Amino acid sequence: MKEKEKMLKGLPYDPNDEELVNGRLRARKLTRLFNSTIETELDERKKILKELFGSTGENIYIEPNFKCDYGYNIHVGEGFYANFDCIMLDVCEIKIGKNCFIA
Image (cartoon, rainbow, N blue to C red):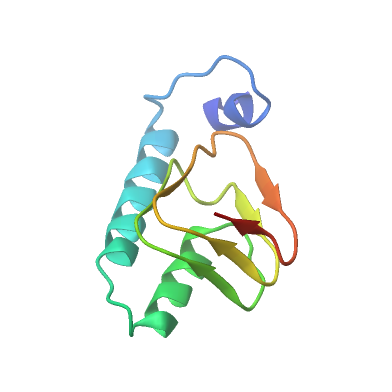
């Protein structure tokens, strides 16, 4: 079983596995880009989040700063909103439905 599969099942895993390290580096790059946007760059923010997350609704909004482990394990529905300094530790899947607010 691959280390990523173990991680997603909540089993002990090696976080130094190359696939997992690369996944975290990808997330760091995308969150750094997201967090460096300015208030008027709403389309760019949405584009970055759609690339980062496993799945999203069409309209989602997160206030910077945002951090996560991998991003691809996060699934949010239409109308999702998260306020400032949200951190999602997504070593396992995170599923958030439609019209949910995290404040």
